[in-house]
Image 1 (cartoon, rainbow, N blue to C red):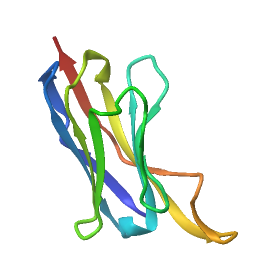
Image 2: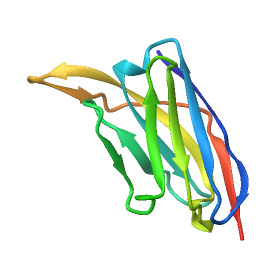
Image 3: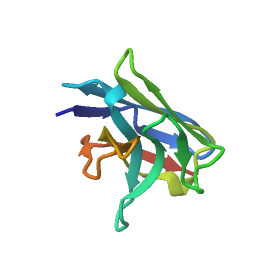
Length: 125
């Protein structure tokens, strides 16, 4: 079972940038589908960015063109570069890992993720 620890959160002004990191231990990230999620107060947790079982990145419409997800398997680390931050990006950010497995002739991701504890991102005007 992989353990995940997020870091890099903080308080920045709108328009600024932050880089979040998610350090993994206990297993190699190359065997996982990785993603970033966020949860603002009073709102449901939402997916922000993900890397699927074949390494393709995808993004929520609200962050396309501003955020970039990347994975360094040698360092066992997932990152999220966040640029042009907006007030509405304020949230607790979590990384999640879903185990890859081969089924039906293709790689896919397990449905149940492992979560980190989160890192707070606060954007001010």
